[in-house]
Length: 80
Image 1 (cartoon, rainbow, N blue to C red):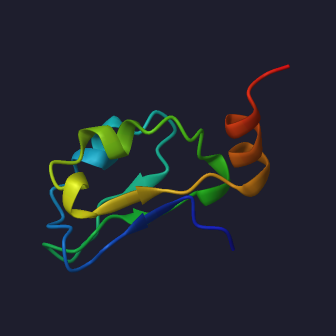
Image 2 (cartoon, rainbow, N blue to C red):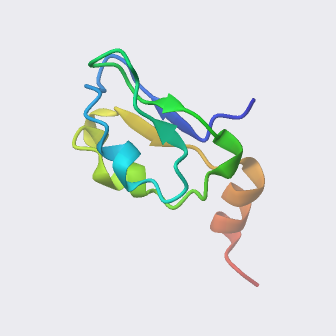
């Protein structure tokens, strides 16, 4: 299974701000306090980066959005 959003459990404090801003409800609150959210519907990700932008610990690597290879290639090449 492809994981479009990856959390670093050592950095993520489970604030769940990413859960609140996700436009497609991709993430779910983790029942264990202080743990990263649960990736509920990985195939629904729009790769808009809202979760990453909202994360207060993104600069420390708490969350990473990883687009699939075809999306990465189109970003690098641009629309034609």
